[in-house]
Image (cartoon, rainbow, N blue to C red):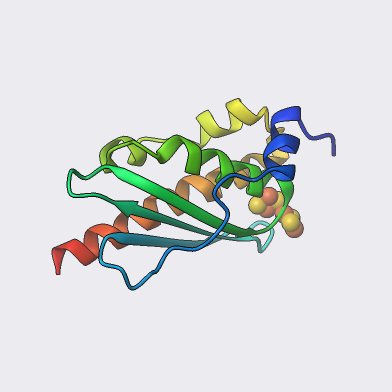
Length: 127
Ligand code: FES
Ligand code: FES
């Protein structure tokens, strides 16, 4: 499997690896697994009073494309509103990283993780 330069860059220098306090009411946590391969991604966002994502962290137990996809989206999401982040499509991730067809599900995992983190945050706020 030949990885693109961008995948290798994010894989070797992943951005925003880490953990936010899941108990913090301003933090949303998304944890998703890929049925196709069993890889797991945890994505967390910290949202400020204006509804803007001010921090994002991830931890991915998975392939290089999944790590690169999550690293990329943490960069993209910082400074976005929740609605903007919810619009991030796996196709944009796959295009940016030049993922081959067999690795498209890795970018879907990142899109699903974003949505799960936003849902978790919104459920907390609704309480
Ligand atoms: Fe196992 Fe992605 S298929 S790491
Ligand atoms: Fe399954 Fe990448 S997430 S191979």
